[in-house]
Image (tube, rainbow, N blue to C red):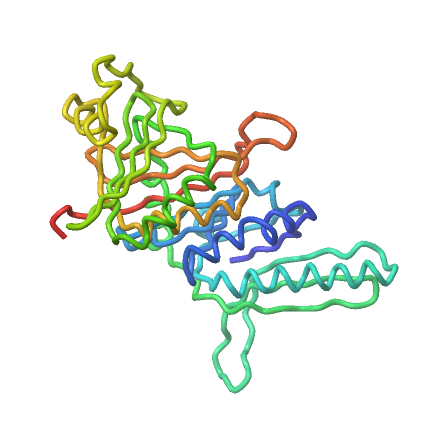
Length: 319
């Protein structure tokens, strides 16, 4: 089992300034999954439930001279503390800057899997090693990782990843995440459970209710991808809640209840600087899916080399 690659300058910037700050908010431990063509950061996929986050990059987006080999179809996966990874990348950027300031030739940041004998230990342990190479010196940082996943565990992870790629039948685009974040920040002080309704008309309705207060926010006439429908004219003057309920009864909308903490956590992905986000509810209300879209810089074309999405578990209304 071998892995070695050099992080490109743009790859370092993408991780250090955007994606690692966002992923750091998702949780402490994630699975890092390398394949022949892609790198995945996976949160909570093996548990089968709970809040899940999936970030995927094509290898050329982050690395050059990318080399991987294993007896498991050249796939390697392990658990890693994302905050340690973030700290190592940040430190490497600082070291590279110092090397550059010294007038040396351009330094390179190599990342590889190694086994080393830790102090006061008799058993070699696996590490993800960062080596910053300058003209006359090198700085090495070792990040402890879990034992690489077995063949059966990698297969289970790949199966869970494939299942997590299924898209809802209707997705609505929310172009202004800051506005949505402001609403959710207010709602967090009211209660713990958030009702989310998404219609084929392009409406996203959120509401939090207690015995004393109801607080809601609605985004209307959003861009719809997938199954869409025309809103009945007789519904135009009704309240947001009534319109939402009628759309659900017609089969033109779905409504689920999620943890407001999970919803707020998904919004932390704005740190990755997506260009917009899509919300959708899986068939049979299995989960609430949030897909973040990235454009090729300077265009309005989707950058297919990067993907990021969250899956929020649906709560039992009686819980």
